[in-house]
Image 1 (cartoon, rainbow, N blue to C red):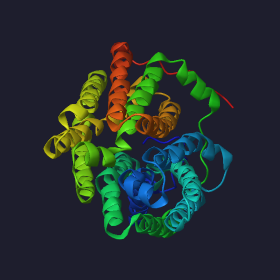
Image 2 (image 1 turned 135 degrees about the horizontal axis):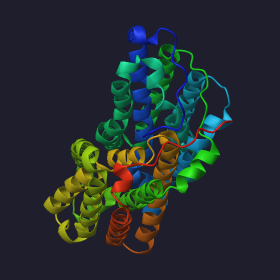
Image 3 (image 1 turned 45 degrees about the vertical axis):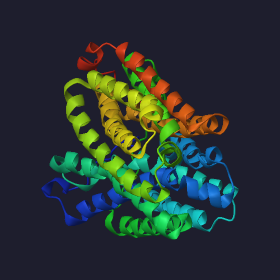
Amino acid sequence: MTAVDSSSPRPVGADKGASWKGWFGVIAVTVGIFSMVTAEQLPVGLLTSVSDQLGVSAGRTGLMVTVPGVVAAIAAPTIPVAVGRLDRRVLLAALMLLMALANLVSALTPSFAVLLAARVLVGVTIGGFWAIAGGLATRLVPERHVPRATALIFSGVAAASVFGVPLGTLIGDIAGWRVAFGALGALAALVLVALALLLPTLPAAEPVRPRQLARQLRHTTVLAGVVATFLLVTGHFAAYTFVSPVLQQLSGIPLGLISALLLGYGLAGILGNFVAGVASGRDVRRTVLTISLSLAAVLALFPVLGGTAAGGITMLMLWGLAFGGVSVSLQTWMIKAAPQETEAASALWVSMFNLSIALGALVGGTVVDLGSLSGGLWLAGALVGLTVLTVWSTRATRLDHPRPRPVKEHA
């Protein structure tokens, strides 16, 4: 994800060559992002196990995804402001410590209520860490290496989907869901040590001002991107949060195979991310339209075509391929819509993305509890389908010829 925090002046001598410590710092931040995304989405693969052991419904267990999503949406734009001039290295280390403690509590929880409280802390760390991490590449490596370092940092997002969540699910299948959370807490502790040792002093940067955020919402193309994010991500997570019971109950796939199938889903997502990245650079509007139509079709047809193991696996891979391109294409949309104020536009995108994860899990859980898994899939398909109307109504010229540079504001 794109970050909210602005970059600070580069360290003296930073352009003379990339030091090994700077690149190892980038790797430490990458693993931190990996752990954050894994922590946010891990309950998807453990849903059935947690539900059965703690005696709560599948819909209510989905709050494990809803709660951190809501908290992260609030934390992303507010934590950089709330901590003032606190050294960003200290902030990142503190957030990672909080992540380690939250997962330890999750592993030892005596009840679902305590587990949800721990998920609140996870949401704080997700929002705060993402708000800072994206701007760190400019402060750790020479300018010519910044694009590569930034790409490496955010490769942690894709890696979490491909390896983190399936591996956590596999650990949960073999040793139990508590061990999976405990392993994630241990990883967070290791990242904490790496951040403390490898990151240099990082003086506070200026956060995005509220007036800039408000101005983005008055720009129709940025607003269209925010609405598209809301519809796509809400629809996806309304269904994906319950992908484990969907595969088991609709497709007849055994629980022991779910982790392997989620790995395949993640690999399909990486392919989709690559294809969409190339396509959105050429025509982002057409790319988002194609993704929206494809994802809506997969979700709507899953109950019809996914009634067998072969059908369910095929639809899951197509699902991963389609959703894999969502982040990169919508991120490109926001950059093209607001090229001179990408930080403010990205702040809205980060908050809406996380809020939509939470809302999707909540809405999907309600439909699953009151209706059926098929009903959740059809609702998800309808929400994603509405994205087509949003994107279609946005003129391509607004993305190809963005607005002029705004007059610089003075504090």
